[in-house]
Length: 248
Image 1 (spheres, rainbow, N blue to C red):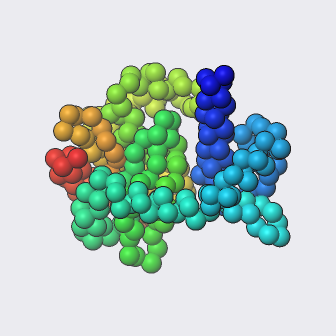
Image 2 (image 1 turned 90 degrees about the vertical axis):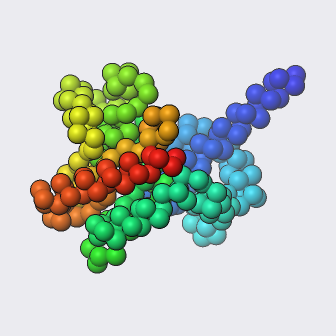
């Protein structure tokens, strides 16, 4: 009986986490029906879980619309991560130096399954710039940082590319060639791959054991990413990534 009780507790925790992950996209508010549909549970079950999350401050319910949004407890956890995360604290001074040198937004991404997450960013001070939301989840198959994280992944690329979560129309052969180019040159470039008008250059940060830890990127409006600028950005981002690889 104890084992069954433990299984039930684990399921409840997993479902509660699924609810919180519903807010990882662009939606800031979601109704009960929307959440239930997204995680595939009955509304009564979701309502009970939301009540528990609300009591702990992880979600808030709007008094008029009765829609839910993330609560202040999530912000407390995020702020604690920023204070305690060794990687973020180590790289931020170099990211700031790189931002001041290149004048564009500098971001740090790590891989999470078949996605990448921006865990640190230093935004450009220019009037027109990329806004980098920390904690944002993005796909691996588009963007310079995604290609870098895939190029140096531990598992074989073929195994990753045939994961069912990838877009059905992806040309895997062409994508594999693009990944090989990243390996050959040591950095990746993306021009309007994920977002119109945006471009990026990224390079890998490795651990002392030689495993990829993160992707360091510079991004900004595509009109500032001329051929000459891309060469400069790639050189400087690679040098910063190599420097940081000595400390992580």
